[in-house]
Image (cartoon, rainbow, N blue to C red):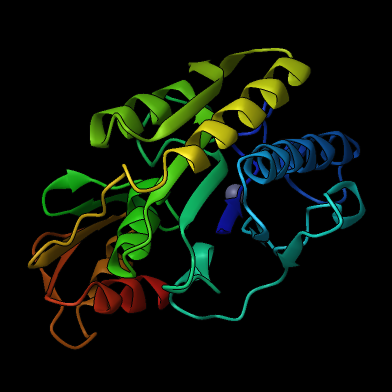
Length: 264
Ligand SMILES: [Zn+2]
């Protein structure tokens, strides 16, 4: 069984400031280690349930956060960015049986974590797909579903996990922290890894019972933080500016949505 894992850091246990997520800060090393421990726990759980091929996309900042030597020996890592539109799930293809998201976080304009954002923190306020607010979980779940690969497990902040459950209650989830204002309440890092391992095992065991969604058309709306960006992207083919800060783009192929997002 082939499992693909995409890992971010903002939804890792205990992470609540940007310094903790960025190289060059003393706090960063502690949390890159916890990010790695959570990925390792997911790998172990998946392997116990029969996964014999696991590849992990390091999907935060420069894509070079995970400490490979701390992962089980059979696990491969995709580090850095190819600039393929699959972005946080680059390298995924139809040969995989399931996708796991570790350390994922609430989207822009949410108070689910002090670090809530969707893709570019600098320029994007909100993204909507078919009228529904889209976080990175939803954007890359649709990418996996386009390839007919189900997303089987997600860990991250509580607000994100509630959205995942509303999207599909069959997806296994672990909430490791709960945001309120600028603060978070976290479970113990060891409790997080134990729960992630268990959830990953159950998720791989449940493959076949989790469905993928194929939508007929996709309407992407992007609300920027600066009106200059809405003006700029209005020149992208088929994009329409529908407000001072907002553009709209319709596509029948989800790949076109991913490609536009890649250019932002
Ligand atoms: Zn990140």
